[in-house]
Length: 174
Image (cartoon, rainbow, N blue to C red; front, side, top):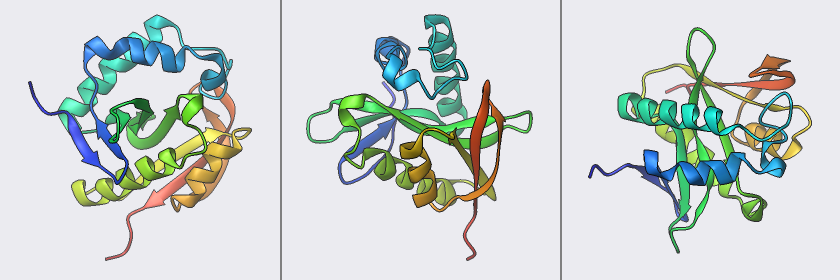
């Protein structure tokens, strides 16, 4: 079996998904508390959407080492959520995103994972930028996007949302 680990932080392991782990995604995105900011309608994802998303993330990981990755704690192997790069728009601009089980909110896991991925992105790709976006009502996610160093560009529509704040991350000058 291929090692799916992309990177590790002090407390976390970020790795690709396997198809047999879809129940973890059902639990995460099927939770109404987690899902309320993930879609324009604020409802949990359907199993069909989750199955399709997981297949897409697996494919992205195999092709580009991207996709929304599993985030597990090193100390005990517990899955805390997901964080990684999807693609946005027709131009398929990399877009960082994250979602954790509520019991792991407030522990700094999202910023730890997202900042490690940001740094990995600059080391491992030659792309000049990526995006981050979050529902304008989701102050916790917006705080992470700002702390990562994103520059607010506008509020607009994305993924069925009518009120999403967009942030742009440009490659640091050498």
